[in-house]
Amino acid sequence: MIKPEIPKNETFRLQALKELNILDSKAEQEFDDLASLASYICETPVSLITFLEEKRQWFKSHIGTDLCETDRDISFCGHAINHPQELMIVEDATKDERFADNPLTTLKDTPVIFYAGMPLTDKKGNALGTLCIIDHKPKSLSDIQKQKLKTIANQVVKLLELRLRNNKLKTIEKELRAKNELLKNFAGVVSHDMKMPLTNMIVTADILKEKYSEQLDEKGKQYLKYLKQSSFTLSDYITKILTHYESDKFDDLEESETFDIHHLLEEIVDLFNIREDCEINFPEQNIELHCNRVALEQILLNLIGNSLKYNDKEKIVIDVECYLHQDVYYFTVSDNGMGIPEHKQKEIFELFSTVAEIDRNGNKGNGIGLSTVKKLINKMGGDIKVTSTLGEKTSFSFSIKKNTVKKTA
Image (tube, one colour):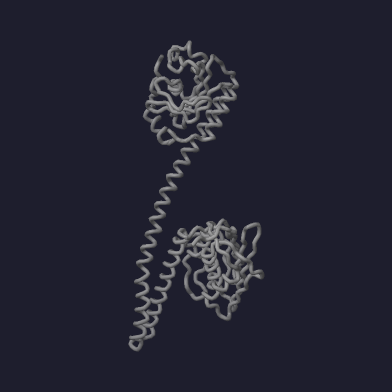
């Protein structure tokens, strides 16, 4: 018996194998299917997908045998990987000086007599292991069988490349989740710590105006007004930032409550303290909803609130529609407001993206609300889109899935 030589690129080969993170992993159907196909085409009882570590040979897939690994020193594949681009064929191991007295060749019931192994070589030339087929008697392969064996080995390599990419993506996703969590915590802490000073500024501005009103000229009073307005604007901005990040912490959005759309809209209208110059039309049919009420309320609060703020007409008209089709609720919130320029319609759901310079009351938007709306809708299994005519109207249409999982106490 001749032990296999160690490849010249062994250090790099072992590192590439480690990065693959495949050793001792669970069986996977995709690999077993390819190994079975190789065995079927080449008409052999055994087929393996092997990987060679420093001291052992481990089988990712083992068709026709219960063995999961062997010592590298007695492996046939250890010889095969020294020629990364070539198919190694041993038609009769008993007549090959490398394997004649190999423990695998001299087995009593299942000796390795015929062997054909195609190295699994990555793009950097590292032969990580082999796709091999084995028979217990002498055998030869046709040219077609040889070609098909190489083709299947290429597919195994592609599976390995896909696995490597997936592993890297999982690592990146894990890092991004950790960074995003840190960002959310930071935003929460900073926002909370800023709320109290802002409240104090608003209260102080009112006290100064009340106590020293006679000593302030019009310009001084105007400065106090600016100070108070800026404090309210920043406070609103912080509140919406918190709402955006808190939307990730909503209770399970698959849990539902049962309520009707008219009752929900009546509560929302009460919150806005609607004036006489505003008309809000509810859906004609008061349908019963089964979904996460808190999330839907947040969505409608944002959309109706925008319809009220970004409207330059003497009379504001808002139409809300709702219907159920095949376990999906479809909503539309339309208004006769300022409208959205066509080139802005694709980006309005991005965080911090704003459309109008100022709203009906002269305040500038912060571009957080619609991003939060889209996030919630997507989590509820739906989507949202906008259609608008500048200066005339805007319509937001969205869908959410009907849920029947009752909210637990």
